[in-house]
Length: 416
Image (cartoon, rainbow, N blue to C red; front, side):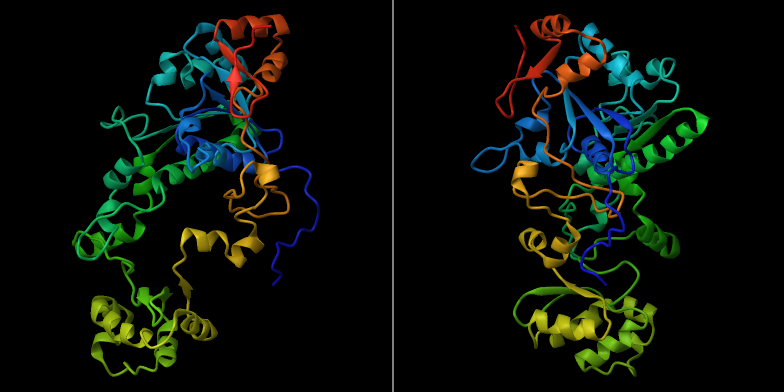
């Protein structure tokens, strides 16, 4: 197989070319949703306050760069507008009428209080796909509770099964509920767009952090339903199969294996152990029941050689295995380089490395450019709506909008 995706043609348009998305979000779940859609070719307009989205102020490194903001807003336009003012809300309403999708992730009812909820816009925009992202959803007893990634991981059961087997809990290292909700939102939007373009009208998509995490509990629910035992954390072990976990090798580096089904006899051959007559390991179910004793036996063998040597032997035998990479090792990995997962192009993206959308196709360009300077597209978008320079200046002077100056990362209110 080629190390690069076989492009049968040079794409000139993404899958979502011609789709305009209005994004009124903060934090991560909403912006991640629209970043995926932007990488698939949609035009995304980031609506943010005149003093900038809060994530712009979350800086990292000695240079204090807003890298978190930049990584989830690449390739978007920036409209800086104060939606708390009537004229600001009027601008958003006019843009919504010229858009296919609106994505918001504020507390339930916050935009409706400004006259920008789904029910407020649908009379003027009957085909609009309106996606609301929240902590607990648009209805239910918890609808008004504040929800963030940490709370969703706990509420959705994930934290109760994450961590070491001795019971010390841990949250997932990545903000999985934020990212998962963004992905579910993108899936719902794509489905609703299909219906809208077929003449079926718009839709209100309701996705939440708590639901997104709970939706991933497939193995744990199966375990609980089948055994009536509440699942707990297993470290790196699998919920229903063994051996399926991490092992430390002779050089103190770690690998993971998943030697189930037909890979089990192959693992025994590679490790040079004969467990065929041991009743504790005769079937997959028995190996799972006695997974701790099995892990102890296998660990003794893994201690006898370095990790990379074991991985060569395991892969030659067709046994699923892999290293436990650090983030640094992941970014520099040759396979990810071939797949284009971490493009290194500071001139194009404004940072040495970005995280790409993992959807490869000859029709999907993926990561498209830099994150916008605050207010970079305000004047252009207002011009498209019919505002002349005098009207733009007047709005800027009153603080309704902000228009970017020439200093990267800053904006000013125009007073010509």
